[in-house]
Image (cartoon, rainbow, N blue to C red; front, top):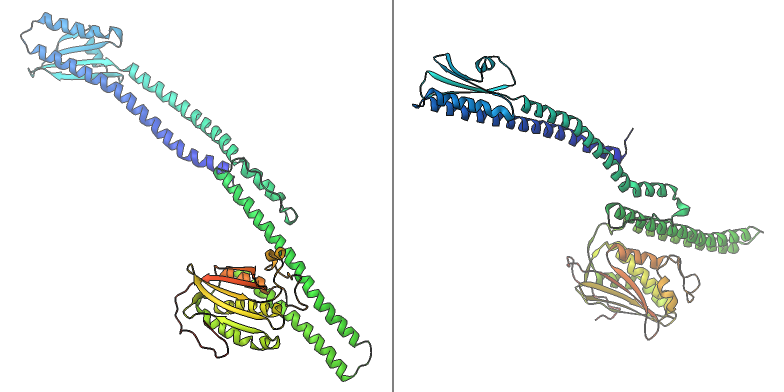
Length: 454
C-alpha cells in the first residue's frame, strides 16, 4: 500500500537524522571523554618530569620529599595522586605511603605517567584515578542515549504537525476536486495563500478548471449547433423525398426531387467537411508541415478560381499585391483561409459589387486583406462573426455552412497570426489577416492577364 506524502517525508527525514544523530553522539562522547583523559595524562607527565629533573640536581632528600608530598597533596580537592621513585628498580621514595603498591595494582581507572631522570638509574611514576572522568563520560553517553531518541521523536512529531498543516490545502483540494463533475465545473478550490507552493498549485488547478469549463461549454454549444445545422437539411431532404413518394410522378418530377435531395446532401457533405477541418485544426494546434508560401501566387490563383462566381454576380475583383511577400505556414491551410474570406466577400457583395484583394508588409508581418462593398456588419455583430454557425442579420439565404470564418480564424491562430473584421467607411467590410514573414524560397510572382496589380 502506498504511503502518503506526509508519512514518506517523515520517514525520509528520520532516515537521515537517525544515523547522523548517532554518529554525532558517538563523536561527542569520544571527544569529550578523551579530552578529559588527555588533560590528566599531560598533567601527570609534566609533574613526573619535574620530579625527575629535581632528582638530578644537588637538592637534598628533604626537598624531594617535600615536592612529592606537595604533588600528593594536590589531590585533596579531587582524586588522590600516587608518586613512586625507584633507583635501579628499588623503591627509594613514595607519597603517600603505599603509593607504589597502588601503581602496581593494575586498576583500569588509574592513569599513570612515567618519566626518567637525567640519571638513567632513577625512574619516576605518578598515577591518578580517572574514575571521575570516566564517570562523566558514562553520564554523557547515558544522556545522549536517552536524549537523541527523544529529540528525534519531538522532531518527528513536529514535522508531522507542520507537514499536516502545509498539506491540508492539498487534501481539501483533492476532496473538492473529487466532488466536481461535468455539471459542476463552475466550482473552484479556495486558496488560503496564493503566494506559497501549494497556493500556486491550487491557482493553476483553478485555471485548469476554468479552461475545462470553457472547453465543455464550447463542446456542448458546438454539438448543439452542429445538430441544429444538420437537422435542417435532413428535414428538408426527408420532406422532399416523402412528398415525392406520396403519389406517382413523371420522370421530370422525380428528377427534380432527386436534384433537390442531391443539393441537400451536398450541403450536409460540405458542413461535415467543414466540421472535420475545424476539429482537425483545433486538435493540432499547429500548422504541421510548413513551407515558404508566396502570398501573391496564392491570391492570384484563388482569384482565377473564383472567376466564375465573380462573373455570375457581376462583380469586379481587383488585386493590389506586390511581389516578394512570403509567409511561413501550411500552404493548403493558407489557401483555404483566403478562399473562405473570398467566398464570404462574394456572398455579401451583392450584384455589381467590388472585391479588393490586397497584401503588404508591416512590422515584420504580412497583412492580407479582403474587402467588399456589401451591407457591412452590424456593430453588435462584429464580435461574433468568427463564432461557429453564426450568421448576421444581413446574411443572404443559403449563405454557406456558418463555419467558414471560424475555420479561417483557427488557421490564422495555428500559424501564430490573427484575423480581424471591420466595417469600411464607404460601406462594406474588410477582413485582415496578419501572418509571420518568411524568406522567399520559390520563384517570384506570376503575372495574371485579367486582373490589375500594384
